[in-house]
Length: 176
Image (tube, rainbow, N blue to C red):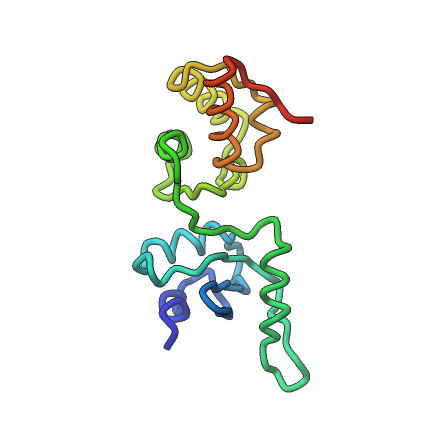
């Protein structure tokens, strides 16, 4: 049995799962049983599997696309995964700023796992936790990032890039 399928078998939030492997990458489509997000599934897999067995992307669907014989349409699953803004992955932090931000986000959000491509708000961040994050981020990195600027950053990796730019130029600027 596929290790991802095995890890999700019996998960209370999973009704059905499809794993599609293409070359060196893989995506996981999950039909939830009740309310379950891609981040919930991703975090479960992060805890259950070694790094080498983790898929590239996880996303939640209402139903798996199937042909007239009931077989999962793997090409459609891959296309859907790439187009889904709620999909999430396991991208590791690459730079020292990203590594520091992962720790800050984990502390502020109370999460065990944060990937470099995660959105603060998709991980459960709100205005209150954003204010705390900004206070700690600005203090830690010696910058002046605003709430509006955080909203314009779609991921931890983008926030890190803005911090790195601010450290070079002395301010945070939003590309418009």
